[in-house]
Image (tube, rainbow, N blue to C red):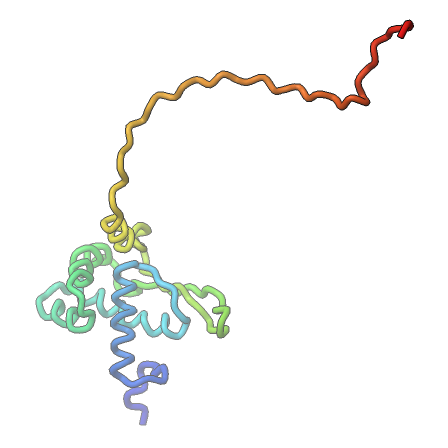
Length: 172
């Protein structure tokens, strides 16, 4: 019998696997493009697509099911407002997996998973806003008008004594 063989196990218990894909789905929906290993990217497709399908339904039960899986109110709000509007005409296939070579450390095949028709500015926008809020404002200094500098003439080098011309004096 092949009951329960639908998903990859990734050599971890079910609870860890669920937490892993919950966090990866959160990251994908927030940044709209992430880089992970190829098997994880292929498995993440199913979770991300089902979350967008919940958002397209838009009813209360779908919102509760998405919130139970994602555990982040901001991501669920973005999912049900922005992403649901973006994909309302598309029937599935909301994500794209692109192969991205191998990882240097352990030669694992890497992949980029992204949302189709993604917002290019979404990647890292949350982190940029956080850093900008933490950074103190620079002190504004009063700019003084620049003075015009006179160009100095370069000094002429003195030749050593042995190279100097002797005066042309026949008497002496």
